[in-house]
Structures are given as structure tokens and as C-alpha cells.
Image: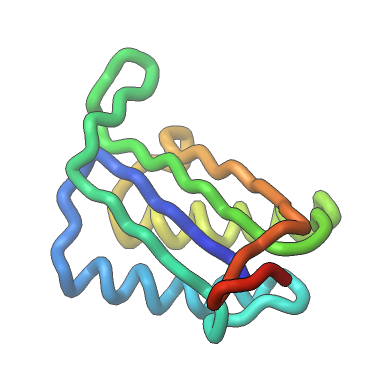
Length: 114
């Protein structure tokens, strides 16, 4: 049950949002036990996002995951792959991309909790 929320101050076309969503679906497999089958993605573009006092292109990503945390090695790999992809696809420097991870043992779905 992963959820990825991407907030950026740049504009992203509908077509590119669909490509990013699909790539996130592939990348989520890098986290053991996770797949696109349960992935929810939220892409918010044109947000009022400032980094280092500038509105130059930036991205803040939240990754919420049901279950215990992963090793730093697994998260480092995921961060590296995700940053590289977004740098290339959205033309935003990796030094302007933040990724936060949140883990929970409480996750509601379809009227009940796991």
C-alpha cells in the first residue's frame, strides 16, 4: 500500500503526468514487497513551492508505506533511481529534489484496516 505524492512548482502536461505515474509504478518494485497493484500516486504541479528562497524548479516527494521501514541501502537505491529519473524527465536539478519516507502499521482500505 504505498502512496507517492509529488509536489512541484513547474507545470507538467497530462501526458507527462501519465508517464511519471507509470515510471513510479515500475520504480516502486525496488521496494521489497511493493508493486504498482497497490500504488496510489498524487502529482501536484504548479504549486507555490520555494527552495533556498527561489521559485526555480523544485520537487518535494512524500513516500508513505504500509509496514516497517526498509534498510538505508534499499531507500538509498530508490532515492537515487527516482532522483535520476525526475532530473532527466522534468529537467530539475537533483539538488532541488527532496524525498521523505513515512512508514505506518495502520492503513485503512475498503472500510477496514490492515
